[in-house]
Amino acid sequence: MKQSTTIWHIFGVVRCKCRCMASFFRNIIFAGCITIACSFVPFRTMEGVTGAMQSGNADALARYFDKMVDITLHDKMHAYSRSQAAAIIRDFFKCYDVESFEVAHKGMSNGAEYCVGKLQTRHGSFTTTILMRFRSDKKVLQELRFTGVR
Image (cartoon, rainbow, N blue to C red):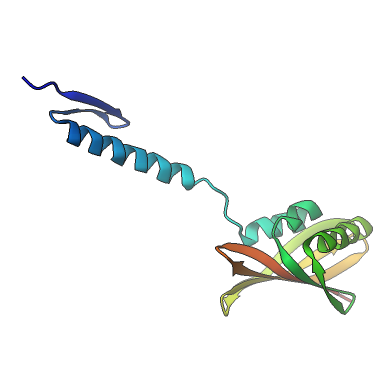
């Protein structure tokens, strides 16, 4: 007489008469658990960047920076390393004291995701353009433009 193997899972109990079937069900359940666990890994999204802009959190924003970031401030554009760009944005947020950020438009173009919004600070508002691209399977922020609204 063959022994049956009992497998517990979220839908109840499965009794298997052979070991290969029990192993198969265990593998299916394991693969399902891994799939569910991986679905909770945060993706680098424009929402994360806009959230950092809304709160004026330069460190949270810097997490999305590419190795080199183009920043345009006061009509002057420069390319900065990730750490330099983080320091520039930190100083900018500190000097201007961010009050809010409202997204005016979002879109995709040539494989890049962009966002145009209005950054309201204590000392005025800026039209802000954010450009993100995929770089080796993750989305990174490559360009930030702050244009003063007169």
